[in-house]
View (cartoon, rainbow, N blue to C red):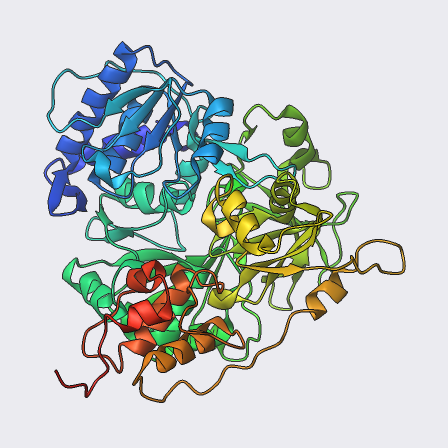
Length: 585
């Protein structure tokens, strides 16, 4: 088979033939060999075909990271279909919108359905991932341009958009991958939300190389020291982490990655100081900054963060093109700019997606044939410039799209959802801060006679239609909308309304609820925390809970996990359940 004819299935099938008895997938005490993975996927595929699934159809996958997730993905591909991974943390209404547009006839569930908590709309045929091998699917002919999966991202029109990714794009990502060379002895961590396209790397990169996919908890689910120990116990050699999650771990436990051969970080601007902190503290074999929109299949550019490369760097570059990928810096007319000048990053090569599901106008706008590039390219909207050494550096956005904790968010979608509640006459949403301290802040002008508890009401209403990472953690209620010289809302003046709070010294021992409040205040960077305050209501999230737990555990007899902080009704309620070091009785 010629390289340009390969599909994801052919890559995995090659490993099944070469090492049928090697472990392909591991998780929750269960191992699957390559042969058993292939046969279970074949059993699932046969069941899907029997239910009418055909080449090019979409199959929804409501499964969290696990052995079953890999069986589900491979089974869908063996049926000739494309998988649609769902987000277990998304509101039911948002999933309903996605499923209504994508219209999959079947939804796959794990054997243990209790791990999936978000209700799905009726009308979908439920199928459970098999645990026994039975009838196998026949050969289903597919090619490199057949869809492999559809990943939904935030949309600027207030409507999520589905990116259709073909087999050739995944093959480009995982073969001859110098940015993260894997082999049969590698064990790659699987911990990302399946709806996030990092899963593409986590699953198919190790399977294409004859290695193992290993489902592990996220750092937000365990005490950091326990999580780091689990990496060693599970013999993890390679891992992807979102930038914000990397920042959180690097800040609290920079030695956590020492047993890794490869650590790939991506999703947001990578803090150079955090990288240097890890490099100076028993680092992994290599750290790579990976950049790439969903529309270009996980990664399009990479930068190896060696000690030498990071020595005098103030802002971590996104680096150089991935294998078989082209990067073009173009002006608004799609003409190349001179080296060092700022332009829009446009990406070409086999990693570029087919387009947006059911959105031909948007596809034509963002996926274009550029004469200067001589190929079909994706317009990222990111503004970049070429540094003297040839690496690219992101300097901003053409639109108002932001990234938060690895998730791409169109701020207009959040604003439109808030306006649709009928609670506000005007609303503006901005991203404030960087790394794990980044958060969304909303500015709202209430309707006439508006509600006294507008922030609470807005959070509740938005939680019904948006995933948690898109709901602003903080709201500022406006008495009027400040206007700039052109008559438009002055967003700079809005941001000036926010108080700038400096971090205070966090090395004092925790002796009371007041000290828990102090730690929360430092981590959340808010002016005041009262015992009755709730961590999430103050702007907390899972990444900041990791930091808070790490600081508190230095002084507590009984360890506090990040989930306990997130679930606590208040600082006082959490304080009633823990004891400070030195406490008696």
